[in-house]
Amino acid sequence: MQSFRGAMYENALGRRPGQRILLADDDPDSLEGLRALLEAWGYEVEIARDGQAALDQVPVVRPSVVITDVIMPRMTGLELLEAIRRDRPTLPVIVMTAHGSVEARRHAAAMGAVAYLPKPIDTTRLKSALVSAFHEAKGDADS
Image (cartoon, rainbow, N blue to C red; front, top):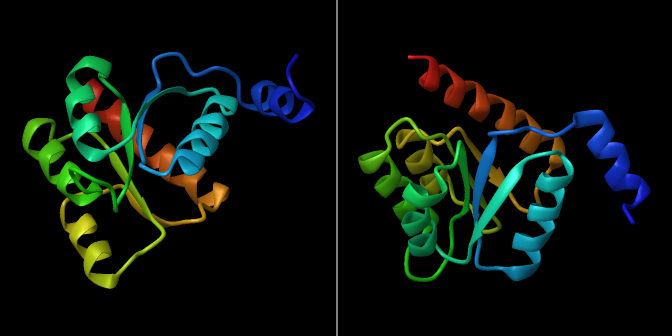
Protein backbone atom coordinates (compact mmCIF):
# COMPACT_ATOMS: atom_id res chain seq x y z
CA MET A 1 0.00 0.00 0.00
CA GLN A 2 1.32 3.42 -0.95
CA SER A 3 1.56 6.11 1.70
CA PHE A 4 -0.43 9.33 1.43
CA ARG A 5 2.77 11.31 0.96
CA GLY A 6 3.91 8.96 -1.82
CA ALA A 7 0.53 9.20 -3.53
CA MET A 8 0.59 12.99 -3.23
CA TYR A 9 4.02 13.23 -4.89
CA GLU A 10 3.15 10.74 -7.59
CA ASN A 11 -0.16 12.43 -8.40
CA ALA A 12 1.39 15.90 -8.37
CA LEU A 13 4.45 15.04 -10.41
CA GLY A 14 3.57 11.88 -12.32
CA ARG A 15 5.96 9.37 -13.79
CA ARG A 16 8.85 10.60 -15.87
CA PRO A 17 9.60 7.93 -18.47
CA GLY A 18 13.14 8.08 -19.77
CA GLN A 19 14.29 10.44 -17.03
CA ARG A 20 16.83 8.15 -15.41
CA ILE A 21 19.10 9.28 -12.61
CA LEU A 22 22.29 7.54 -11.52
CA LEU A 23 22.75 8.30 -7.82
CA ALA A 24 26.20 7.74 -6.24
CA ASP A 25 26.72 7.90 -2.47
CA ASP A 26 28.57 5.69 0.00
CA ASP A 27 26.25 6.57 2.91
CA PRO A 28 23.47 3.95 2.83
CA ASP A 29 20.95 6.16 4.66
CA SER A 30 21.53 9.10 2.34
CA LEU A 31 21.49 6.83 -0.72
CA GLU A 32 18.22 5.12 0.17
CA GLY A 33 16.56 8.33 1.38
CA LEU A 34 17.39 10.19 -1.83
CA ARG A 35 16.44 7.20 -3.93
CA ALA A 36 13.02 7.04 -2.25
CA LEU A 37 12.49 10.79 -2.72
CA LEU A 38 13.52 10.76 -6.39
CA GLU A 39 11.35 7.72 -7.11
CA ALA A 40 8.42 9.42 -5.34
CA TRP A 41 8.95 12.36 -7.70
CA GLY A 42 8.62 9.94 -10.61
CA TYR A 43 12.22 9.43 -11.69
CA GLU A 44 13.84 6.11 -12.57
CA VAL A 45 16.78 5.75 -10.18
CA GLU A 46 19.84 3.50 -10.34
CA ILE A 47 22.31 3.52 -7.46
CA ALA A 48 26.06 3.15 -6.99
CA ARG A 49 27.83 2.92 -3.65
CA ASP A 50 31.03 4.67 -4.78
CA GLY A 51 32.42 6.73 -7.62
CA GLN A 52 34.07 3.87 -9.47
CA ALA A 53 30.87 1.81 -9.40
CA ALA A 54 29.00 4.83 -10.77
CA LEU A 55 31.52 5.32 -13.57
CA ASP A 56 31.25 1.63 -14.46
CA GLN A 57 27.44 1.92 -14.61
CA VAL A 58 27.24 5.02 -16.83
CA PRO A 59 27.53 3.15 -20.18
CA VAL A 60 25.16 0.41 -19.01
CA VAL A 61 22.51 2.51 -17.25
CA ARG A 62 22.72 5.42 -19.72
CA PRO A 63 21.44 7.98 -17.22
CA SER A 64 20.01 11.34 -18.20
CA VAL A 65 21.56 12.88 -15.05
CA VAL A 66 24.14 11.82 -12.46
CA ILE A 67 23.91 12.92 -8.82
CA THR A 68 27.06 12.24 -6.82
CA ASP A 69 28.36 12.73 -3.32
CA VAL A 70 31.89 14.16 -3.12
CA ILE A 71 33.53 12.04 -0.42
CA MET A 72 33.41 8.35 -1.41
CA PRO A 73 35.85 5.43 -1.47
CA ARG A 74 37.69 4.24 -4.60
CA MET A 75 36.81 7.41 -6.56
CA THR A 76 35.56 10.75 -5.23
CA GLY A 77 32.60 12.55 -6.73
CA LEU A 78 34.91 15.18 -8.24
CA GLU A 79 37.03 12.44 -9.85
CA LEU A 80 33.81 10.90 -11.15
CA LEU A 81 32.77 14.27 -12.58
CA GLU A 82 36.16 14.60 -14.33
CA ALA A 83 35.90 11.07 -15.77
CA ILE A 84 32.35 11.70 -16.99
CA ARG A 85 33.49 14.93 -18.67
CA ARG A 86 36.14 12.95 -20.59
CA ASP A 87 33.78 10.15 -21.69
CA ARG A 88 30.37 11.86 -21.82
CA PRO A 89 31.00 15.61 -21.79
CA THR A 90 27.34 16.61 -22.11
CA LEU A 91 25.97 14.36 -19.32
CA PRO A 92 24.61 16.66 -16.59
CA VAL A 93 26.09 16.05 -13.13
CA ILE A 94 24.82 17.36 -9.78
CA VAL A 95 27.35 17.29 -6.93
CA MET A 96 26.33 17.07 -3.26
CA THR A 97 28.36 17.00 -0.06
CA ALA A 98 28.22 17.30 3.69
CA HIS A 99 31.84 18.46 3.72
CA GLY A 100 31.94 21.26 1.19
CA SER A 101 34.76 23.67 0.59
CA VAL A 102 35.07 26.74 -1.58
CA GLU A 103 37.82 25.00 -3.56
CA ALA A 104 35.67 21.90 -4.21
CA ARG A 105 32.72 24.07 -5.24
CA ARG A 106 34.91 26.03 -7.68
CA HIS A 107 36.39 22.82 -9.09
CA ALA A 108 32.92 21.32 -9.61
CA ALA A 109 31.74 24.51 -11.32
CA ALA A 110 34.85 24.62 -13.53
CA MET A 111 34.16 21.01 -14.55
CA GLY A 112 30.60 21.94 -15.52
CA ALA A 113 28.55 20.58 -12.62
CA VAL A 114 24.92 21.71 -12.92
CA ALA A 115 24.76 22.33 -9.16
CA TYR A 116 26.77 21.89 -5.98
CA LEU A 117 24.36 21.13 -3.12
CA PRO A 118 25.17 20.95 0.58
CA LYS A 119 23.84 18.07 2.69
CA PRO A 120 21.36 17.72 4.17
CA ILE A 121 19.72 18.28 0.82
CA ASP A 122 17.23 21.12 0.49
CA THR A 123 14.50 19.55 -1.65
CA THR A 124 13.59 22.87 -3.29
CA ARG A 125 17.19 23.35 -4.45
CA LEU A 126 17.37 19.73 -5.59
CA LYS A 127 14.18 20.10 -7.66
CA SER A 128 15.57 23.27 -9.24
CA ALA A 129 18.88 21.55 -10.02
CA LEU A 130 17.03 18.61 -11.59
CA VAL A 131 14.95 20.92 -13.78
CA SER A 132 18.17 22.55 -15.00
CA ALA A 133 19.89 19.20 -15.48
CA PHE A 134 17.03 17.64 -17.47
CA HIS A 135 16.75 20.81 -19.54
CA GLU A 136 20.46 20.46 -20.39
CA ALA A 137 20.01 16.75 -21.13
CA LYS A 138 17.04 17.45 -23.41
CA GLY A 139 18.91 20.22 -25.21
CA ASP A 140 21.82 17.88 -25.84
CA ALA A 141 19.48 15.16 -27.09
CA ASP A 142 17.87 17.63 -29.52
CA SER A 143 21.24 18.66 -30.98
